[in-house]
Length: 193
Image (tube, rainbow, N blue to C red; front, side, top):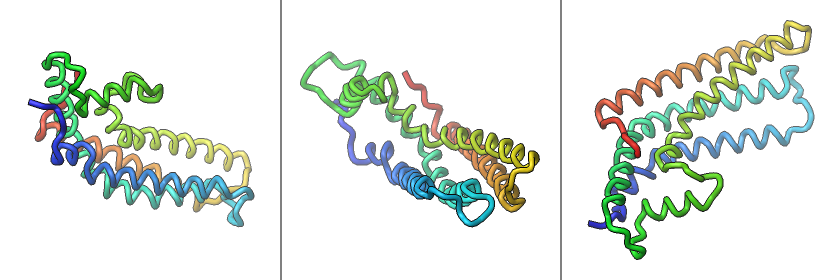
């Protein structure tokens, strides 16, 4: 039995839901790059903070639409990867057998950024970024609140939008966590080695 992945298995691991998550990330990056190009404060008194909040609020809607299918299929993809790794470990060492998992091991061991990372741990990174973003915007909210209470110019609209964004990110993170738990129950908990 070979370890090469058939088209259905590739679609499970790297399918449409992963492409949709990648597209959301690319859209966010493009918005942040445009924001970084704005060298002077915009006309609005809130400046960059309001632009950042607005950009992320737009992306958050896209995230909800693409991250749920991704999270729903994550357990299935992780279980498939685990199964392939287990199959690989049972095979006799044969230098001519370069299948997907073996190639991944070679690539991940040769690149510092991937050193020691398993494919399943990289697949879940976009979801982990939601939680990191939640912490980032909560910190931004605290800092923005400090600036305004110290008399710095800012708008109550920006503060209101920032609070709403923090609440929306929190809701997304909570919903993704619930969806992941439900998916693990129905698809099995990935046990990666």
